[in-house]
Amino acid sequence: MSMSRKVVVKINDQGFNARTGEILLDAALDQGIAVPHDCRAGQCGTCLVRLKRGVLLGGDTSQPGLFHACQAHILSDADITFEKLPPVGERRGVVTAIENLAPDILGVSIQTERRLRHRPGQYYRVKFRGYPARCFSPAPPFAGRSAANVAHFHIKIVRGGRVTPNLGSVIALGHKVVLEGPFGAAFFRPGDGRRLVLVASGTGFAPIWAVAAASLRTQPEVPLLLIAGARKLSSLYAVPALCRLALYPRASFIAATEDADRHAPSEIIRPGTPLDHLPPLLETDLVYAAGSPKLVDAVAKKAAEVGATFFADAFVANPPEEPTWLESLRQTLALARKGLSASPRLAGNTAHAHSDDAR
Ligand code: FES
Image 1 (cartoon, rainbow, N blue to C red):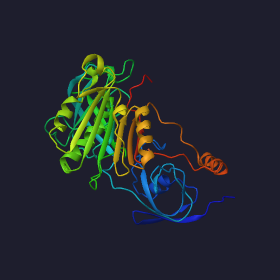
Image 2: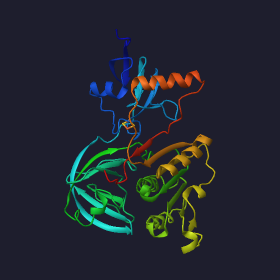
Image 3: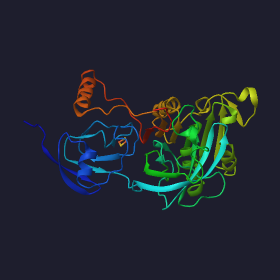
Image 4: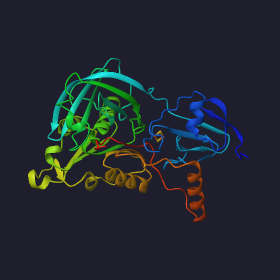
């Protein structure tokens, strides 16, 4: 005998009947309510919703009331909202430019048949014809503006990878591409004057630069600190963007490389990792981090310590297995028995497979 019961769920003012225990995302999609989603594993953050009233189990984040719809089970009548985002879809296009940004990083431009619609900081699943899809975030060019049907990606060449070593050789100008998306919740939200602290390592600079450029364009009076890091000075391809940032009096930047001491000790390029140069955060800060999971986790902890709002885009190889409804309940009960709450999650957390592995 089923123990579930009927409840009424309202999403963005559209009401429908659901059963307790149902995954919120599935229940919404069954009703034709297009809650944005991608990984369905609690990793990408695309499906974030706000719970106004009612009870959900699982899918919680560090921000009170914010849940991953793909992980949340409906437990009662509920009133829920989500941010309207550009619809997810496919865009066909071709490679129109490939340039060296650094010895191990390429700038790849793709022109699509129809205009692209995404929020700064979101990402696409990019499928070069004949190769598996990889996730990359479009970034604005370092100078000038790009057309609405052109996306620029910063792509690290991964030795032994199945896709990226072919860029510039087998994957050349004119190669056909399909972009699916946009996905991700670590995107720019025009703010209320709060300081933006943006932290990037490696090609995590792409979504971070997208957020920075959007802020400079729409709210140049808002203080902004950007910290960009790379292992080697030769991989620090962000310098032209940082020069552009220097034109804005309310913006400041720090560039850090682990070999800076040896090659160019200077005020501008500092030795160490971005974390070494993160200033004390404030509760009122809006903090974004993108790049290696280690960096993103460390910045998340610093943000959580002061209660700052945090958005993350961690570049991981693969999402973990999705816990089942029963496992989720077991975990919650086990934690409750120990007098603990579920482990804190990040708000607007995006973790997806940017890296080009050999599978
Ligand atoms: S679809 Fe829910 S976190 Fe990715």
